[in-house]
Image (cartoon, rainbow, N blue to C red; front, side, top):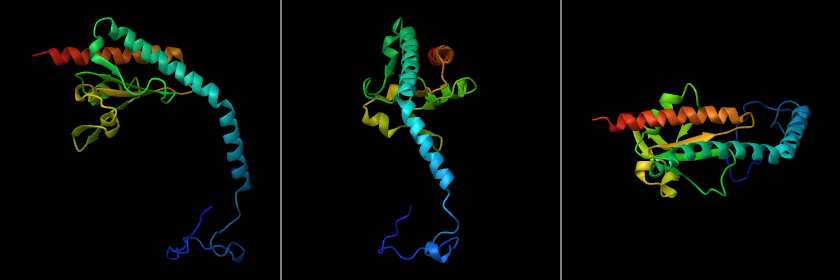
Length: 179
């Protein structure tokens, strides 16, 4: 539905409708589409809790795989961002100190889809306003990855993704230590 305020100048229609539509809308309402959309929303709502639990389980498994590996020998080089209790069920924001997230993504993009936690503008990498608001230190913020799970994500997908990310981060740290 479109509400047109009297205070706004007259809109020029792209397609003119018939008199019974006030010359504003051409054609007949797509009742079938509206009904299907309503049914889709109902089904989505009914399975929302189950889907959220599945995605949370996968996200938590990924977080555990990454933190367990690094807690053994480099606990001060990783950080989980955000509130651990009040966060999206499918998203893990994790930072790796001293690496460039854009280089990590370029390294793993054929195997794992993820996004950087910092914004890239005209070849300049900047810390996102979200990470700044969360007071993530610069040395971590530039190495932030956002990894998301979905309803189709399996625990074997999580194990695979964790191995790929771990290998890429370890390579980046080794390269960083080179003279």
